[in-house]
Amino acid sequence: MKILLLAIGKTDEDYLVTGIKKYVGRLGHYASFETKEIPDPRNRKTLSEEQQKKAESFLLLQQLQPSDHVVLLDENGKSYTSVQFAESLEKQMASGTKRLVFVIGGPYGFAQEVYDRANAKLSLSPMTFSHQMVRLIFVEQLYRAFTIMKGEPYHHQ
Image 1: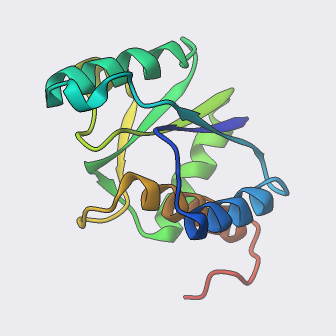
Image 2: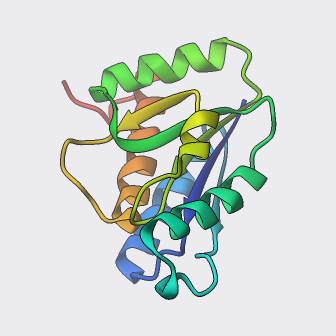
């Protein structure tokens, strides 16, 4: 199974880029993992919130394949402990899914078209994080999930 993290906009803080690269590199030992940044829509500062979400959804939906299992990182999604997330990921891997796509939206979230295409929603916390920080938090949790599945000592209970 391939895992893809799609995200709107780029990460421009060096400390976040460094952290993301660290965990993306570690993930390569466990799975075929890729991140893809979708450029912010053109003229986004002149767009209303709804127009921006629509423009982002158009760009995101172009990246998806019909057979993808799509999980939105969304504040209203299901919350898991790290162990529960590992169990969920393991079930998804065993289900025969060819490509598992996690999606981080822009600052206003997702347009309805993206919600309609999604198979699930995942919340990393009831708190709100910048979409740049979410990338680091998510790749660390994905790495943690794989170490839990493999019984490695990274995660402590």
